Image (tube, rainbow, N blue to C red):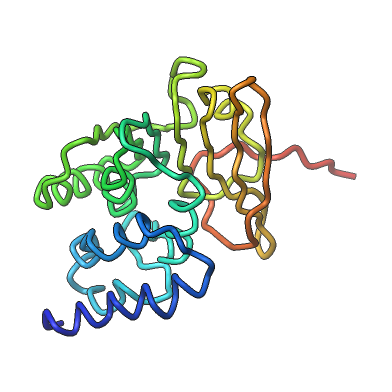
Length: 220
């Protein structure tokens, strides 16, 4: 794909996919226009980098669609200096966007190969305010109330109360809950008084996070 084609595809991604999906935060739009998405996909998928599809990244995993990432970033409202936890590094593109918005990002990835590839891409693109960890972010031992932002890049069937507990006052958690074909993207916030608020944002479908807790189903 030629440079001009890439820039046209990037413009069309923002203008035709992301803006019509109620993404109006100029900081988010700028991040999606300046973080080079094409550098976070394998060469054989370059033609799909800006398409409204879940691009394969290896290990049976896919990138979030551009519109899903855009809505997640807008909901999380990442500010400079925020302490950010990302669960599911994947390609590293979302990690780079969170960092671009000013967050100090710790990102967990269960697949070592994906984490290593993401680390290389982030380094090559000059992204510095990130720490990549190989492991299950849902099981990480983290201090309660220590995070401003939590981004979960795979869906969960069970509401993650343990992640809610990690939010500092003013903290925001984005997570997709449910089973296909009906999942809900949710924003969970902790206000300055310590109260938790839950907001349903939109319906979507997102592949399940690996090793995610499973609901109890009754067998008759």
